[in-house]
Length: 126
Image 1 (cartoon, rainbow, N blue to C red):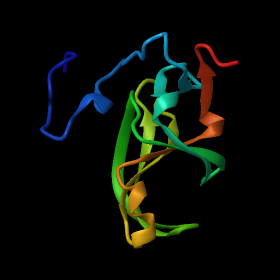
Image 2: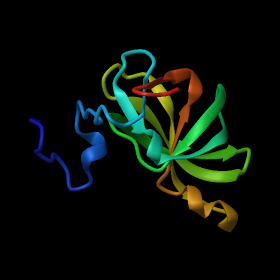
Image 3: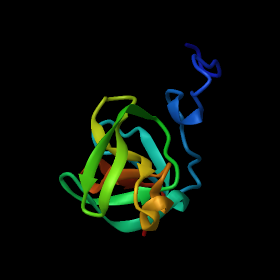
Image 4: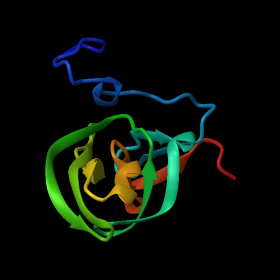
């Protein structure tokens, strides 16, 4: 569908193709195709573990598609997660936390994990 149209009531800005973050912001981009993924201001934590190494936890992301949710036993317990992929090149980047089953993990719900191996820093990092 053309930009600005919604194909489902659940679709929001995260799922519109080709969102470009302002040049004034330090951003994380897909290492494979350079599509923007997140603003540095959306970074919550750098101390996460992905399936293939270190990962960052973000509050929100752009240019990312979401697969079906499934229950997985992660290092911090049972979670319902959905794999996320780059809308541009379709590389799996990490996952979205849909639901946490332990109260200490509830803060992760609705947040996104992107593995460091799939990200590159752009715009004004020292």
